[in-house]
Length: 168
Image 1 (tube, rainbow, N blue to C red):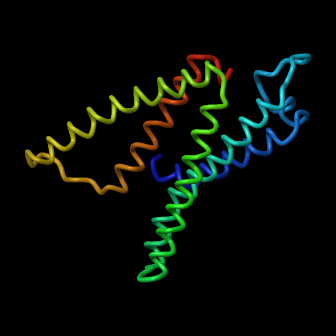
Image 2 (spheres, one colour):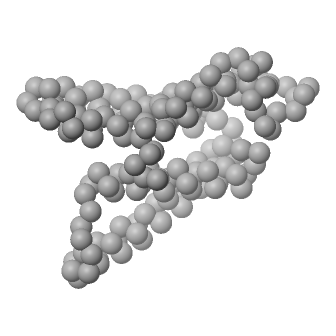
């Protein structure tokens, strides 16, 4: 499951971008849209930006392993690091923009997902670190930790959104 997040995320993001590319397409694809309901441009914009964020997340998860696979070194590795840093900056800027422009319900879902993820991951990381210090388990790489953080946040975000009816 964890290894599929990077490759799958860009496709999910592209699907969201296409689904929100026009009101007609969204009306056909959205399970929670009922005929006659108003559909404002802000909703479609929110979904398109969320799709772009998902595409960037996938690219960010794919870029470092691909760079390592191709044995980038020296200037090539530095260029890859700069590119990854720029992608991360753009993704963070878009995340902030989406949260600031979203409605109260969506913001509450993001806050809940962030808080729950923080506490779950804090406990999990501390517990694993303690077991490593006691010699009961092996340490895991930082990259593995990044993938776990992303997977936990994704799962918690989906649960939070479903609880609030955002994916109905």
